Image 1 (cartoon, rainbow over the protein chains, first blue to last red):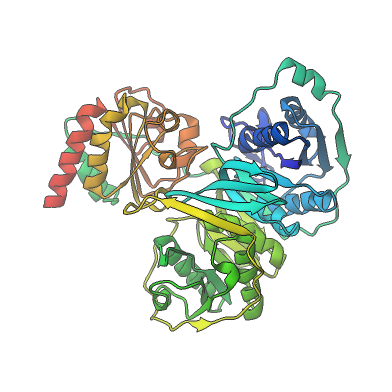
Image 2 (cartoon, rainbow over the protein chains, first blue to last red):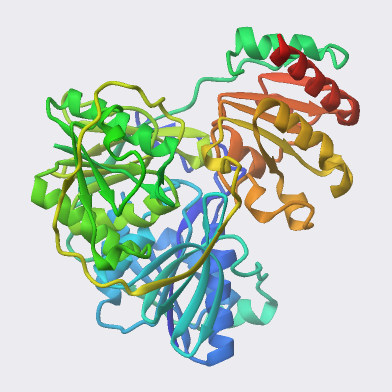
Length: 246
Length: 318
């Protein structure tokens, strides 16, 4: 089975969020970057498990500059066979998806996996976009996947529950919690990752229909108003009269 | 024209759909055009979408749309948009909307924004805002394509009665055969799903054991709220997976979020920090959650929660 896992580089969950250049760019100064957790913990690990069960190969793909190579090497250390970096500085989901689809178009991948969303732009769009561009079915927010030959049975999150669907390869999915368990790369994996191929590919020409023109930070929260634990009637009054939520 | 995909679940329209219709109608006003609703399949109260702002309602029935397959649904929506000449396509930021948004955008070569939280500004370019960095910032996107596709974050604006009922018209478009077979859908009935809930009562490790959840359920019942939980208790199997709110679970933005016995790790806050009002009940005054709270109660939740339930019942009885 040929598996393609799309990975993204994001600021660490605890990173300080600030902007530069007239609040039009994310301020990377002092920020630690990681592989987007949904891509790493769930999409990549489930792909490795599928390969371990049925044979085949796992390729990871990223759209970004050489600043992303450390994150890509981590994916190789966790167990991917090879990596592709499309050498561009992406500005939108549309751009990323079009680049990945252009690369994957003639490679006959059986399954394309992404995380359910990135923790920076929270878009959740790239998986569906790749699937559309490659004419594949797409299952979002997958929490469980069983393969039987080329038929997959996938459970996905829906509002207040879950849906189980059946689909044949080739298909695209986006991975949510439950699909797999995080793997920590071991020393052997880290050593081997240095020798695995990381192919840098030139981007295709795309006219990007969307861009971020500015960022703002939410209004600073007023400090918490403490209510006497013996006086819950007061809390109810505040929620009704002041906050107007009940 | 602004075209709103009016999502239905089991033949019914949820509040999120009505919000999307009102959002579509108001966007249409800004653009000096009209708002139409697109319904796939049959549902109760189709005419009623007109009340929330749609001046036309189109209904599509086709073989490929019996099961939810993002590909055939996206084709139906995109083909309808082309047929009707729609320039802005809107859907809810639901599990269905998230599956469709990117597909529709690629089909229409349209710029898209997932999870917008307020009406667009249309002077000097089409711009919309959405939360990014898990609620820690807001980004303004500019869409330069002729056609734009947006998904609306739930609870961003209230549905408004701004029109009259409209009789639906059948619309015939090309729809490919479905390649996804839905085997089963398991949902909790009789309860408002978390992403749609306006009031949420949530609890965490401070509850000590799953048998103690009765007081949380009682509080939720007194308010008519939906219950939620933190990651550790979902991981421990104390509460069902679908109740888990936070970075890896469900992200919500209710009007009121009450958290009892949850310390407020950054990953938990990422899923709830867009709530309008946050109440934190914790015996540890140093719990980080108090920094993100509007109201705090420092005390033993086993005493505080039943007192709060009693106070709410007393308020409701008035």
